[in-house]
Amino acid sequence: MSDIRLQKEYDLICVGGGIMSATLALMTKLIQPDINILLLERLDKIAQESSAAWNNAGTGHSALCELNYCPEKEDHSVDISKAIKICNQFEISKQFWAYLTDHNLIKNPSSFIKKVPHHSWVTGAENSDYLENRFKTMKDHFMFDSIAFTRDLDKMKEWFPLITENRDPNEIMAASRIDRGTEVNYGSLTEQLFHILETEFNTPVHCNMNVLDVDPDTDIDWSVKVENTKTETIEHLDAKHVFIGAGGGSLLLLQKVEIDEKEGYGGFPVSGQWLVCKNEKIIQQHNAKVYSKAGVGDPPMSTPHLDTRYIDGKKSLLFGPFAGFSPKFLKEGSNFDLLKSIKTDNISAMLGAFWHNLPLTKYLVTQVSMSFEDRMDSLRKFMKDAKDEDWEMKVAGQRVQIIKKDEYEGGKLRFGTEVVSSKDGSITCLLGASPGASTATAIMLEVIQKAFPEIIKTPEGKDKLKTMVPTWNTEVTETLFKESLGKANESLGLD
Image (cartoon, rainbow, N blue to C red; front, side, top):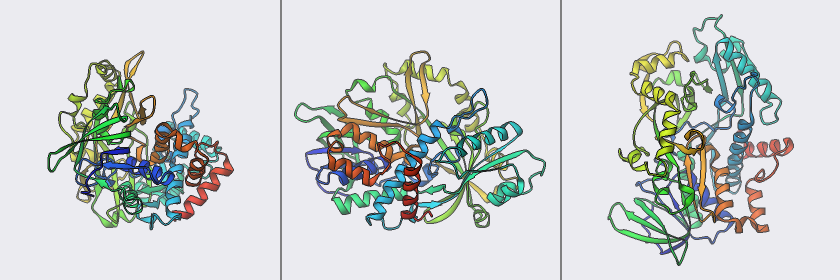
């Protein structure tokens, strides 16, 4: 976005032009406007990898419909503790976006967030009983007390008619619904956050800038080696703090950083594809996000969903995701990324994770070998009458699942996101995938606490954060939650 000549020293250098760097930089600027921040992006545009609308699920991951956040116990009770955490994290994001809207920094929130009801839908007696148990447990918690549940086909016809069309009335099904669900275009949001940084804080993104290495520096904390990919010139920049938020590319850069905390981390890349509807008549019949259960033995990432999306200014309908395998860590990455990530300190973790996740390997092999017709057959489990000519395949983004050392298994594959940081917090790195973008504000607050404790310990810093995010660092009561939810929904036009 900018060809302005770089300075030599910075308070913070953010690597990556996605939602994470945008959120961190803007929040830090709002708290301390005079802080000197540099934003670097390897590609020629921002938000082209994980933050791009086609490269993520677009769901405001608030645990309203994602069943993998609510595991069933042996006694058939349902654990919603993870759902509570993720729901609160998403609401923290909404509070921050509402603050930006209230202060006229975001002009039109409907350009990136819209109200789309969230549903869970299952078939079969066992799954239906699970969904009802989940409903009863969630109904008792104030974050989810507006949830509705049904086993009635006619009610489901009201909620998502495409799925119920030509269904056998005797088929055992169940569904739940929460009206306040959202659809988020994280690509559009990211562009708007960076626009605020450039226009309000004179902090543009420098594109075509590839960070090659980050080394300790005796005079300042870190020396960042940067290549201009157009001119192939190399610069060495000094930074007190570095944040690595480069999506799948974060691991490879972290491995070059001389901190003990990086030891043992590995990554497993997974690619994705969507079935995208081409028939406008069908698209207009669906206004819902409908998530089902992953197959027996399938990983959480395989959860199928039929989603209303708003991309490139128009309503769309997507089904998937279908997983695949690519050794690349980024969509615009190298086929040698996976090989380059294998080091002496993580090889045992990588082998252990592979050995203990053979079902994942089997799942990926099955997914890669699927034909277009096989994928359409998967869609027909949702939409009985789906026709081949109404759908096409579109490639989604790359995600890199975390592999971490484990005392018993050698290594474990972890789903979710994790912040890795040096002891003093001067360098932080975000690894992992979903729920990712939905919880960006909460994750970046964690980064700020690690990197800039001196800022948020001041009365001014605390007051500013409380204004931006009322439920930050606070026990969330029913009164506080519903009050902040109501204010955010009003500001964002989600009432």
